[in-house]
Length: 309
Length: 222
Ligand code: SF4
Ligand code: SF4
Image 1 (cartoon, rainbow over the protein chains, first blue to last red):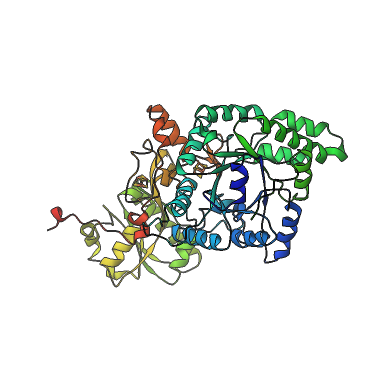
Image 2: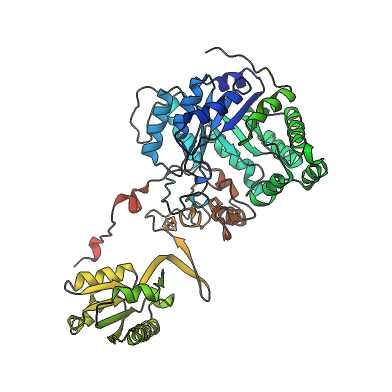
């Protein structure tokens, strides 16, 4: 094992993994994160904890991870390169590892323009691919970027995100190849709605043998309403929502819209399980965490495998 | 060139509220090309300030000059004979010109009339856009001649980020994604394989992060 991560053990055993997501609160109340954690406990193998997502200030990812770890969950610390330079990044990686966090998801981060502090200075000392390289260097070679040796390597399982639907399409697979070459262990994809396009991408991934070098977890997000489906289609950059899904949501009776959203999500998971090279799902149900357990159960992914330690 | 834009009139006139004898100095280089500090802009600013002050019943005396350039001591010398007669000098050069004038004339109060924006090009008549951040270690040979630092909103060396959609940057539908341009250019040049080479973490010490920079050419020194 490269890391001390439960997620790595599950994936290495060839089990179909389930991860989910948890957004820290906009305040210092630990209870908020505990409540979300309790909803997910036992139903997922790892929980991403966002790092000031959309550039809106929230409780730090590291501290929220520690709170979730205390509940017995396996947190995946998201880290963006927007707010920290290489000194702070390496320091936080060491700190997180010392606190028992052993998964990291390396991201660039949304531009601060989207958030509530648009006049902030950004950092971007490195990009997400260079962050993957940095964690790997620290973990496998026991070195800092500056070349000095560190004492006590951070045993982190290294993840990254990938959006098979973003533009330009011709570099979507080469981009994954770059992340693999940088040393990423697992990938969580952007929300998948356009399955034919996703299958096309996965075929290109397999043609290059990348599926054997990295664990790919397909991302899914259930629609709560027609409004949400439309919003995802029109307003979220790099999101590909086919019209027929919007039609399905519209056709569902008023009191059954959310249920239809869950149905679509479960059907997507079933199809993802059939795709060679997909080793798990990442269920993103932001501010709808209570639905994750139902999705996991109805998708036939419950109970989760038990891992000692 | 360095692209600049004039500050709002209210801001400039508030800087000189209590002054009555003013010298406005234009610059004949970059800010002339981008029409921010030419002889013509000096005239426009002078007449606008005259108008504001006459309306307030506090007329002001303004002299107008435009130098070849303000980032060169030789040309700044041309002000020597009369600069001392003015309470305040408004420089219509870029930030470098304003500072150099102040360095040369220690007893004069030199104020900026422009906001210095970026190193860029004239895209079309009346439109300028940024091309270079002066990072001190040019990487254009790696990226098909499109700058990843100045043209990507996050200065990513291994882009694009997940927010690139329809060729546009996530921060604005009016902004092309720099990485889209890099990829198009590499593909036009038949060099798309270059995209897969990871550009290593950057050495920013040649950028402003290394402190104020200086170039010394021993072969040219007197
Ligand atoms: S790589 Fe550096 S020097 Fe070259 S264009 Fe970009 S910012 Fe300017
Ligand atoms: S969308 Fe393109 S230009 Fe904008 S931050 Fe992402 S990679 Fe850079």
